[in-house]
Image: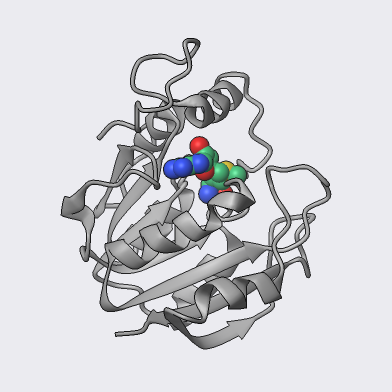
Length: 210
Ligand SMILES: C[S@@+](CC[C@H](N)C(=O)[O-])C[C@H]1O[C@@H](n2cnc3c(N)ncnc32)[C@H](O)[C@@H]1O
């Protein structure tokens, strides 16, 4: 699957739009401070006490550490990322067994993905996209989930930078965007986080309203 070409920059390689070029450029420059080399600690913790099975989408998967953590527990996981280099990196790791990776834009998903997933697992994709596109993010998540599908989000609330990415996220905004279509089942401040994010992340488990 290729990213949308409708807003292609003359500088962008064919098939990639400006935002893809930006992320791709950061991967090529090795400017990837989000790359920690292992799965998000709040996800690892959750997987010790809560099963995430079935079909799972991880949007903005980067090098796929979260994807492989989920696959190693028996889920069938697709990691999606707009940057080709992220996907190449993700595919270079030893397979956990049930995962695959697609290069593509979360905002331009194929119709065949509609209603396909039991879960969407979010980690630093929501805060990476421009805030004006958050409604589109919600639309995409809603579309790809099955009726009664579940969502697990690790939200990075208050990054250091004033200008993103990562862009600021508040609990109030999450509630405003998600509550209409996603019932909140549980939320907590994770006990373990990447260095520098302790106390600045919020985890939420939600279920799509049918
Ligand atoms: C901050 S990085 C986080 C990567 C990964 N979740 C991690 O924590 O290592 C954000 C990722 O989202 C990807 N991304 C940004 N916009 C996207 C979009 N519209 N569709 C798919 N992926 C996107 C970027 O290429 C990048 O890999």
